[in-house]
Image 1 (cartoon, one colour):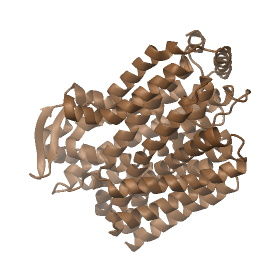
Image 2 (cartoon, one colour):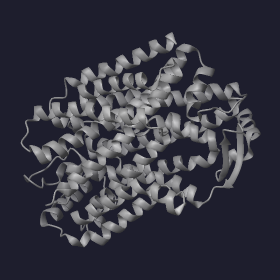
Image 3 (cartoon, helix red, strand yellow):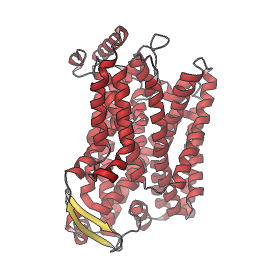
Image 4 (cartoon, rainbow, N blue to C red):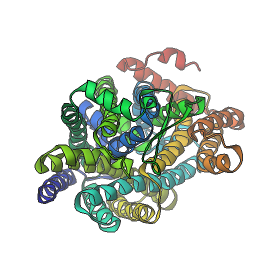
Length: 522
């Protein structure tokens, strides 16, 4: 425990040091929210990864594989495809459009700092409903998303130090809030680079040690097969029976389970904490390199996380009471206390790297899209900066309350928030940068239909339908239907057409808009 305490202390001190470094470079609201749009390819790529793959990657995914085998890997396949698609389709256009779109109130380039402000400016929304509704959705879903990270954080502190949830969450929240409040987007992005490296190395080191201990890949395969043949089948169906203490056969995975897993990939087109990295990269020309770095990291990391789930099945003689602890338990069983401290710190890094980004986006929504947009449009920039810092603390405390008094798993909380963002924002953002004739009425209808369906689907499905389909699928489908049904209730202005054509021209000039000529005529 002393080794772990020392390692965690050094890691946490390093995060605060980066926050202090970024504090001197954060002098405006633009710096706090988007870092002045100055991220290079490596920082943008690794920050996007660290912001995305939270405790879900190191706890949730290995735990899911441990319980049900290869059938759970459909989620990883869907995520890999969705992540690559968002970098290719959305990143270049979002980077240019958010900066160049005309300000709906003042005219001139808006330099939209949030997705909510971009949507209002992109559609020249006279009702301001787009900005208000989108900000509400962001705040609501981030309460649950940040809470998922805090649940993982509490589990880690319990596993390593024997702390109860309250002090564990308090320590984690305190450090995350401190460096986020100090350095804003720059602090979050540069700490993400360190955290992404730690996560990837931990995912590499543990399987190597474990496979060696099991006698090679052959020993691993034999150990998994001995538990149940169905664990290595991509169509299942096996599940860990906690009462019997063994893996029992279930029905073969049907189309619902496979489709639900793949549908997770759709979520990438609507996650504000990931999309902000696309908006903050310094140039559209840096995006192709960043995409290669980011997708390579993501695919390899998920493959290793899946391997860890299987390693846990073969390594532990007695089935685990909490499958989501398979990774930290392997670390403690296989490595020297000093090495274990470093590897366990990587799990903490995974949780913190996502929580900080989400806190920042939620605080930006409250400040930029709440206070500045509807209360005091001419607010002093320095005052806005400090209001943003205060709102980071407020959101963190609310999420901590959900984590402490809720009883859901990391996977459940992430799945709920992921579907909400993916369906509430994904369809309208993709269409907004590719469809010239889209209007604010269609965007608002799609946002409400997608967000509300994501919130209510599980309740309706459990009570009446019993399908078991992931909420992302019906929510995205209804969002698209609503967009096209209600789009005609508003008109496309001349300014909107000019903005669209201007963005297309800049993308063609940068060489980052494949098919832009055709898209411009949509």
